[in-house]
Image (cartoon, rainbow, N blue to C red):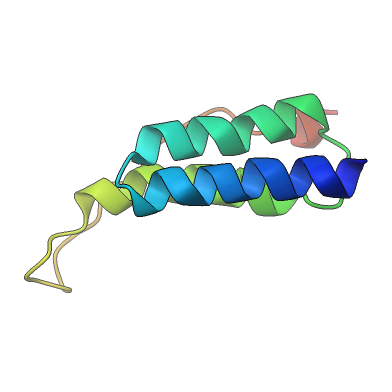
Length: 80
């Protein structure tokens, strides 16, 4: 069951990101981590949640420009 929910959350988050709905994608990844913080997949989706919002800050024409980093609280599995 965990594998199925990981696939669902991961693909939905990926869909949002491909549609340039970065915050929705990040929220979807975070929802999986909140639901199952001890899953083997939780670290991967926690990183995806951190990276997704930064995609909006990447300039299309210049790869050398600074990228804004979003600061957020650590995932629950890191707090215990």
